[in-house]
Amino acid sequence: DALIRAVNQKRKSGTGLLLYLEDAQGQYIAGNLSSIKNLKPPVDTDFFRFTLSDDSSDKRAVVFRQQILANGMTLFVARDINELYTAQWIGQSLSWVLVVVLGCISGLSFGVAIYVVNRINRMSSTADSIMQTGNLTERLAVDSSWDDLSKLAVMFNRMLDKIESSVRNIKSVTDNIAHDLRTPLTRMRSKLDRLPDCDLKY
Image (cartoon, rainbow, N blue to C red; front, side):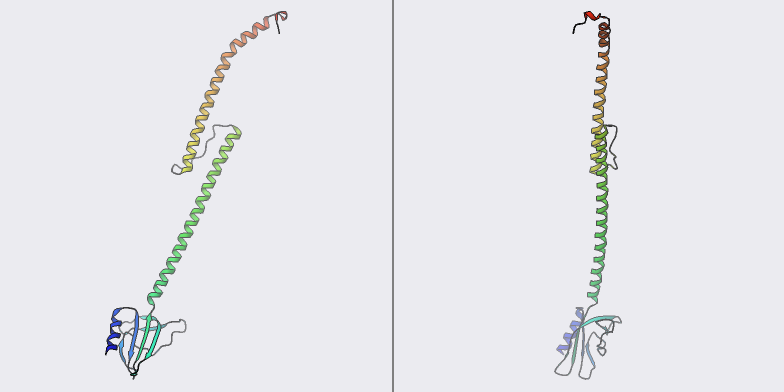
């Protein structure tokens, strides 16, 4: 009686154990399995399939022990591994999701690296062209307004605007000085041209 109560208690606890207790004549006494006559597993799997006495669905199970007791009763104990297979399937699915996410992150990182390197190379090429040709009208291309490279390009273009403006002002001042000096130098030259050679002293 104590064994039957223990089996029924385990049956109701929902621990995933599959229990079957029969008497010496092979008659069902207690447990949540309908029968244990077919103990051989299917040929395509390495686990047993059983049908619960109160459930029509199959249960995949690993046999723990089949114990023949002293009074001739047989106690069969197995473990339901449906939950383990479900956990394994979830783990595999999450692993594939993780692999896909890591692949997307790697591809995105590689694309961003190529994009940044190309922009840096373009900026370097433009700056080298300005230094080689002295053409201060060239400007760096600004692709966007949110990243640091674009901010750097904007500041560099502002610096080129300042330099171009300063060079233009210097050129204007030198042109004015040359214009102001042209008149007195022309007069001095005309006077020197009118002097006789004998009055020229070296």
